Length: 284
Image (cartoon, rainbow, N blue to C red):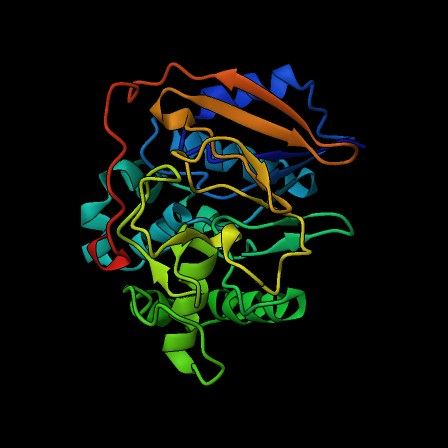
């Protein structure tokens, strides 16, 4: 059985199918680990959702920030009005079924060798705390009152982990960590104003995986979310968002043996567009 981790798809369904052909993916024997942001901005979010859902146990997907936007748009009209790229999902006859499937996806997945998440981890979290925090947010998203939380999750604060965070503040921090984190300071205070390549950030900021003495340094983490970082290997981490949506590549990383990268070129319609500055969830 082969395990392939795949970077951000963002509705580029045709490119996903080409990549699966390139790796000779067999849904009866192989497993996909999808690093989040399955939907949005690309042309075929609905097709991508239906396809991955239809793979059943052959696909594991963690939630990314664009997937969270879709969940919020499904129950918050203000968000839905601003996310026109997701209208194809919101008006689909099977929308309710797709949203139900999506909100039961994890924020964090792991086996004996690797961990999968969309964005990053604060330096204060070790493996056990990471599992605990992911489970707390997942329980909320899967609960009967999930709509209330989705209407409250937007915002950039709190930006730093403390053990005394509770309620919505704790849940918002967890979601922001798993789905939005790129840069932070040495104390783990998240920055949401910089999404460029390493070296473009202010001097007080570091990539989350480069913070000294982080408690998760022994975890082998596969992540997406950071297209301007490109493919990355270092600090026990593997960044696999290679900018498919922006005319870059879609990448699969084989994980069941020595890591092997397989990428395809993606001549997407947004190739000549500038990658937008990420806005706060409150501006979703």
